[in-house]
Image (cartoon, rainbow, N blue to C red; front, side, top):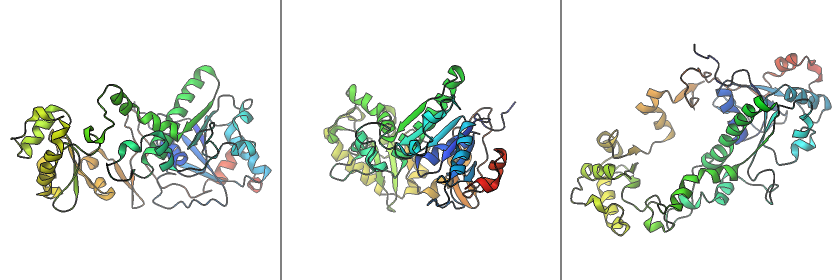
Length: 371
C-alpha cells in the first residue's frame, strides 16, 4: 500500500526563519512529508512571493521574540517538535534562551540542527561570510578554475545548498533515527565549510591514487582535454562532452569524423592542445541544436548547456516530471523518488504568519498573547 504523505510524515520540525541553507533544508524535509513550522519575526526582511519554492509545504507563524509571551510560545513549539532548524551566528539562540541546553529536560529527544558557514567552533566561527568564502576555504573553488582566469562558481549550489542544507538535512534525519533507539537528541553542527570539504572526497581520492594531477595542463578535468569540457557551437551556444572511458572516447572520435586520431593516445596530455583545437573547430561548425540531434543519447557522454527555462522544457526533464508550475512559476519537483511513498505536491508557500492563529490554537494559546 502506498504511503500517501511521504516518508517523514508524522515528524514535526521547527524552522527559525532565515536565508539560504536553513529554508532549503526545511523545504527538503517538508517535501518528504514532515510538518515544518516556520517561526517568522514581524520585521522579517524576507518577502515571500508566489514563485518562492523555499517555503512550500510549510506552515508559518509570526511571533515577536522580544516579547516574553512570544518566546514562551516558541518554547512550547520546540518542546513538541522532533527537530529544530536554525542558521544564526553561534550564540544568538542561547541569548534568546532557546539554546540546546534549554530543552534537555523538557524535550530530551530534540534534534537541534544548526547550519552556519564556519561552524559552531573554531577561530572563524563568529566571522561573517557567504557561499563563495566557504567554498574557497574548502579547496573546492581551486579545482574549478580555468588556467589563466579567476576562479568562479555556480551561485549558492556548492556551498549553501550542497555543503550546507543537504548535510544539515542528512544530519537531522540521522540524528532522529538515532534518537528512536537512544531516547536522546543531540546537536547537529552543519558547517558549510565542512560539507563542501566532504564533497571533495572523490577528487581527493583520485588525487591520492594519481588520477588527479595538480598540473592543469595534465588534468583532463581542468578544461584542457579535448574530450571533457564545454565547447562553443556555431550559434554561440555551448555543448558538453565527457568521453572519459576509452570506448566512449573512441565513439566520440568516430562521430566527430576524427578517425585519423589514434584513440590509444587519449591520455597523452602533450597531444591535447592540437586535438582540442580540432574538436573545438568541429563543434563550432554546427549549432547546438544540430549537435543535440546528432549526439544526444549516444555513448559520447553529451549534453547541451541549457538555460534554466530550457532545462525545464527538455524532453527528459518533462518525462521525469522534474519541474512543476506553481502559480505560474517553475519550481524543481521534490527529489528523490520512492517506490512506495507519495511525496507532497508542491503548493505555494504560505505568507509570513499565515498560520499563526491555527498554530496558536493548537498550542491553546490565546491570540492576544502572541506578541
